[in-house]
Image (cartoon, rainbow, N blue to C red):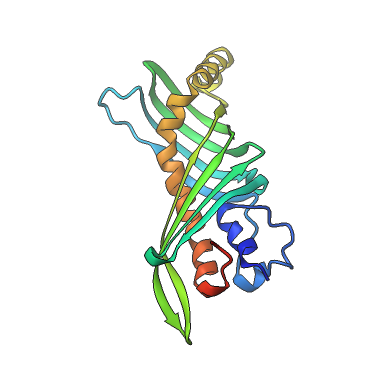
Length: 219
């Protein structure tokens, strides 16, 4: 059994061969699609920020994670730290409901409805922190923190029913948001990264808390 294959779940690698990787034994569930539920992405700051909005996503579902390919895996056992990087060949697609009210780059924006956010060129960076513990003569790294950050090459987003369903204003605003996607991503990233960190940490805990260090195939 190559436990590295299981550990790839922590960076959302392809996990189609579930029986081979003994997912039920570890209590792991498939990651694509997965729901991050309700997420407060931004709150009004009233301090002159270019993006000053109340924005929340509800019942948000993420797909595309299964296209992840591990590009780097390093273990620093002396400091109980494992680092992963993975690139996705397909866009990460996030869909759900939204509520938005505020200012985006001096323009007012308001709406409630469905949204679709696509993140292209997604690259994940995951760091798993833990503490050493010996159980029945075997050494484990007990996970106490996981940090998930990411970079993207492009983002497209569509918010439906902006401005009470005014199609012209809504299309204009969506075009504006997509033209200024980098500013939008910078505002949204911290909340999305926090949500992904919270989602993946229990998975990392189940893997690392169950597998002795000497059975983990990492350099």
